[in-house]
Image 1 (cartoon, rainbow, N blue to C red):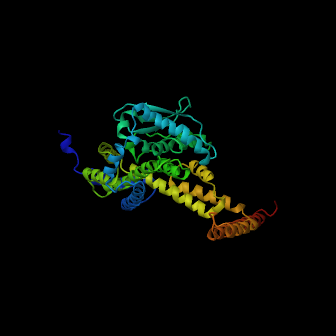
Image 2 (cartoon, rainbow, N blue to C red; image 1 turned 45 degrees about the vertical axis):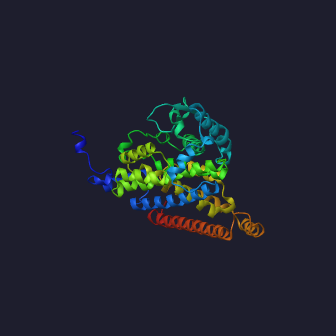
Image 3 (cartoon, one colour; image 1 turned 120 degrees about the vertical axis):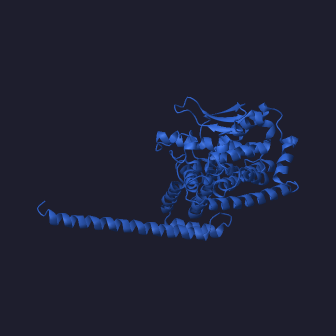
Length: 417
């Protein structure tokens, strides 16, 4: 009781002395950006509205009457076609999805798909999350493990499995981890990131949660393009999960930047997501304990999508999705470095075009309206090529001038040599 009476009245970090600066530092640590809490909050609100509209359209197409998200979740939970009959069937559903549906599609996502260095194991720990990925051991003696809490099978439905599996295994965390370990340029201390003592943030080596979790959320989105969500229910499952990650932006910044109470955070998630009350309460407790971490997921995903569109616009028909993913996965770090990697990928790809090839793409655009290539892209190719050539010429002239200047000075200072 003496301890309880000494606790602070507000849950947010900004209620502490120097709390606003501390929270900004936590946001920088987890997102690798200088975004203000209000900016992140507004971004979250925008994403929640966008995704909710997509959900409304999808449920309308499915013949489901408009209702609150909590009512929608309850109706889906009692849908017998979506229920699991046992914990064994629950685990088997994940195994089948991962090894029979996801792994065969990896060849469309990356040039070097990971081997099946992954096992699926169940856990019955009442405090464990629904799913959790653990990377392989340092010496490679133990594979990566995707843990599933089998005790929770009655609280979850089939439509959630594909998105959760893509997030935690391939093309999500396990694929990212495999690439990081395969990359010879990645030092050992970066391959095996210390995720313990998270409470030390921001006074510890970067975790780059924004890349790790951003990639995993982007991986869920890839399922749409690959047709891995086999029916409308699975697509709904992905959207509900994305909605939750977007709401995390709102709640984290609400708690630590806008003086929200714990009850206000719970109320917001209850109204704007389809998560159960126990899950919401646990999540809010986590956000209170680890300020800023919840913002990493959506910030990272949005940036990866933005860079992908940038590369696609610049490269047109030369854009390769698997090559883009290869570039991204080998550039784990802050978002500023990731952008530099993508810019370099664009720059080293553009110069391979000569004038004849550019004319070919002009003709192709006229003949084939179905090709995703436009005049603006062609012009950007030409302009980029001119800029690259001009830059190269300036660099060469500068180097020649410096060489001549040094030669003249050398002859003056050492005339007899």
